[in-house]
Image (cartoon, helix red, strand yellow):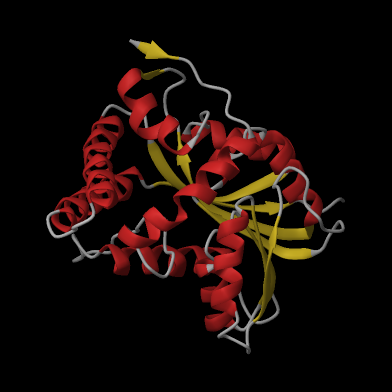
Length: 281
């Protein structure tokens, strides 16, 4: 049975991520690393190493350096922007729809006085920045959650300087219609209406005026991420005394198994994209 996309709003997304921050931090990563892992050769089970590798690959593809002024859209707990500022001495700002995650990021930033970055609560569809403010816009696994994706692409185009780079990873919806199982465990679970296919994403960026530089389907890494996280959730649930926390971990482990099925059935995917804002002739 196929199920059409729901109609979650930005408020629905904000409420969900505000309310679930503690659950994710208590299980997934206490530093707030909440994105998909890019598993290098020889690494089959180390999620943290894979998550760090995702950041390194995306930074390299984006060509971040000390002259970069970076906007991280959907910056969450601040990890990627702090990584970029710490490794490349770039400046920038993180923008996130979840006020709780912005507060968490700012609290972490308070211990990193040398970093030339800050974080702000706001929407990707109405960014609080002047045109041509940033040399780079980056994002990890968050733009899919924006209900009005064309509007967010227009805003990203607006805040980038001519020739600026848009580099991101994001979840994909390979099929227009998905099963009830995938809808429950993949889409509704995080208030995700639906997204682009791998080709559809490139077409959307091209139609907005971006020049595609890199596009890679990484769905195998997505499957590996949820295999590892599901196993971790089951193992940790065995030693958690709090019944509510244990049930949450076991439910997440169950969703991880269903997400792997959805990936195999091409109802869920993951990709990396790098595009350049075209300069006018």
